[in-house]
Length: 118
Image 1 (tube, rainbow, N blue to C red):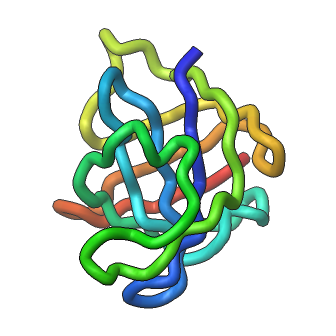
Image 2 (image 1 turned 180 degrees about the vertical axis):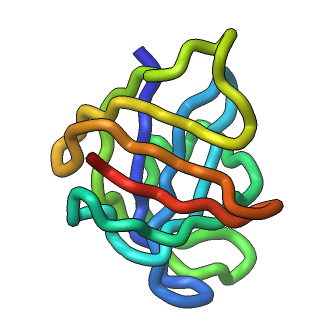
């Protein structure tokens, strides 16, 4: 089962990075707030893919880009099959230490998304 991680990141301002394992990379979104309130709509920004090492990493980020601390981690499964999914909506089931349930990411513009945990 693929893994996910949520890292608390302090640069350039406090945010949470949601990373979903996708083969040999981590598909990543920057969340404006912690995903700790089911039903809350959180503004998310799609950012570049990250290396798998971040699944188990805590510490300084290269290039003087602050530090990351593990906030949650676990496994996930896709709620929308690969044959049906689009680049506009990502729906996954998360089983982590803090986060459990269905997470929906809806694209609202080029790189802006809304994240909601149900």
